[in-house]
Amino acid sequence: MASLYSLESYQKRRPWVTFSRSELRQLFDIYSRRVATGEWRDYAIDHCPDHVAFSIFRHTAEAPVLVIEKSKPTRNNRGYRLVYRNRALVQAKSMAEIVERIEKRPRLVKR
Image 1 (cartoon, helix red, strand yellow):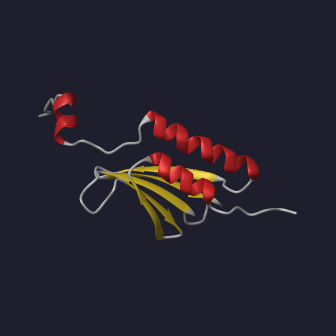
Image 2 (tube, one colour; image 1 turned 90 degrees about the horizontal axis):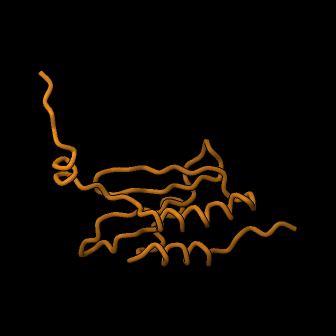
């Protein structure tokens, strides 16, 4: 037989880590600017119970160039992490610090 579960009790038992609306706005602002310049082409958002990741791809069939991860802050983990080509660059306490770091990264200049 089927069992009925209250959605409210399920969410209390298993809180998922998610990007807030303002964090997504910051991510999509920088993403759209880089897409307009032709540097980035695709993205993916991966949800897991303990973290969420925003992956950015230069080409759809490749591995992600950048990954912005948000997880529950702990003693060793500050909450946000920027990974560039499988190497952790920055651990930060806010999305603004991560976006600032992405903006500072040198870009390819076309002549």
